[in-house]
Image (cartoon, rainbow, N blue to C red; front, side):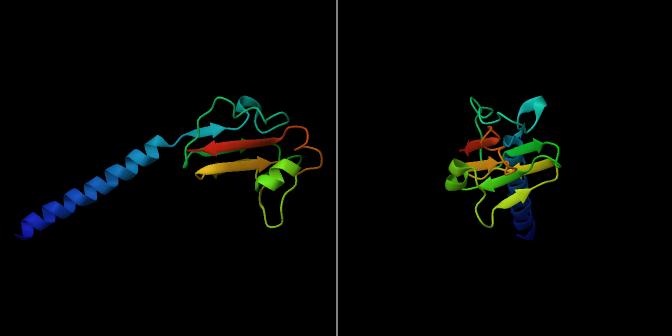
Length: 123
């Protein structure tokens, strides 16, 4: 009887580990802007790409002249970071997408207005 329970427990643990592995294998990593990195005119970069919750966006840029700010719809439309917005400034930021809209801008003066903004919709 004890051996049967141990086998069932081992099988359950194995299935859990397998499902975690499959989930992580499904997520993808995207470098925003491709080889050019996070730069001006990035707004069209998402066109034709399919994102899923759990995918990672990598923003490569010069942190002395750019940053990445996660914004809401109003912030995206106005090119303005709302109060309390998460600001990334490492120059090699990796951001995991959540389900739904994921909106990012550069909030250095004039950069967002020049196209340094993306909207990634994750299924």
